[in-house]
Length: 186
View 1 (cartoon, rainbow, N blue to C red):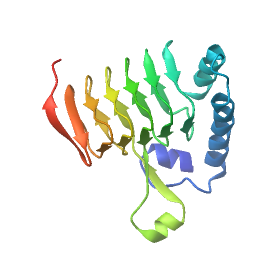
View 2: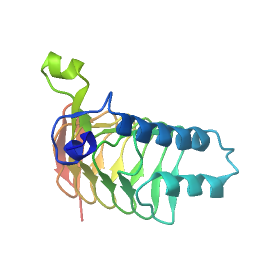
View 3: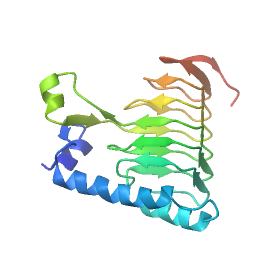
């Protein structure tokens, strides 16, 4: 089983030293380098690069540079997607974001985690769990979303939150760790 297959199976895998994964991350970094250096007026070129990098996009897709990710091909965004400056997505596993999702500046979405065992961690092993963000979701500034989290349709995550577990649909959630403080009208 390759390291990529282990990753997709939810097993510990070698993310730091595997030649295939290193090459795929390098290819994404090349596209990101070009993307992050385009002039603001080069909107068509920016969208074309996003469509090459990401696994799926809607027709309306804006990610303000700078943008960083690991592979790109594991990221799927729906229609009318907007992400403000400094979005980081560590996409060892799939990241699925629905239609009409809005992400404020300095948001980090992590699918990658590391074992608590120091010897495994020092060997470069990690795991990846998918992250799902539903339709009509707003993620506030400086939010961190951890591996395996699902944020339900119509939810709002307040600025500065650290999302460690699922957020049900139509919820307002805030804090560190993030918790639901009330339901929102559907």
